[in-house]
Length: 429
Image (cartoon, rainbow, N blue to C red; front, side):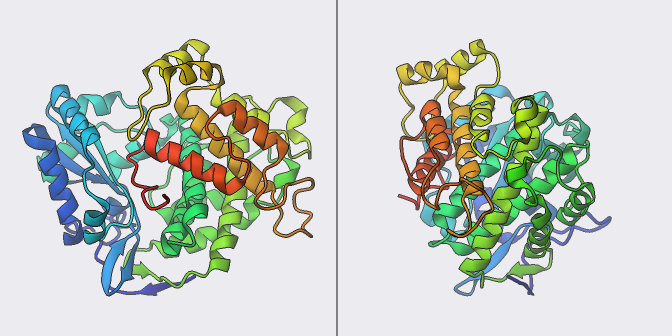
């Protein structure tokens, strides 16, 4: 996989002093739609994420530019009633149809947070909020609002937020596995995006979050493998720097990513990042005190299932019950109240979905490259799920499937339609 130099429609690298340019006209249509949906209560619309920093990924399709990066926007509303009304409108109907998004050159979701300045100030420190105060750009409304944003520091990001970042990236990897035959460049983008977020998690463990992707990868390389890696994942982190190099080239300002990604390159990167994800997850689980004592060093690959279930059930039982009672799917059908309460001791609805994704990645990490591989003794053959993984998935209650692919589809659908906007699984059926 290579990155071929071409004219780029995005801003130049905004991490360098004195650089930056107007937002690409290619993003004008979705921005106008969000402004329209916000209504008169909008104070300012902020562009965040990779489109704000100049690290968004674009490809050419049929002679036109298409972005593979999510479009992250914060609609800062005048007051909470205005924000609540905008959220209600967003929940009632999609911001744009799949056809419109394709016409706008978007091959990834539009993510809009409807907030107030006071609401932002109450948010915990997260990678997204740290980056918001660093690099967000006002694309509509009061240009002075960016200077009034709360400032968050990387050192304030909690272990829980690191774990949530990891868990959310698990769905990117599962989605990439399900969609690579239909949309290979987008699937590869999800893998490389996750690889860079593993670098972010590694630096956050020491209270740092370098601004640019290349700097994060370089710092994570210096820090080395997270502590406490079990024997069955030995060496997995060491393969990640090569993927970081590809990920940095993939999104370098001034280029458009080449489309000629091969299935073999993608499959290798996917496996490398999945196993490195499990290393990072294991370190966070150890930090949370979940794997438990000397058993965490065992070579037995079935042990992670109990830890995945334990992390899904984190928080008090009262909290799990409250969250289960109040849960409502963002899109589609909400699981029944009886089902939610019956499963509450296993975790909140959201964390049971997260735990299910974790179980599937742990199973994928143990699956050998070939029937002759000895990389994970006792692992299931590709496509099958180990008995321990199946037992954990039944406990979590998100899928009853027996195969990896079927279970991954159930779990990604649950994540996208219950916790997200529903855009990622429109094409999966």
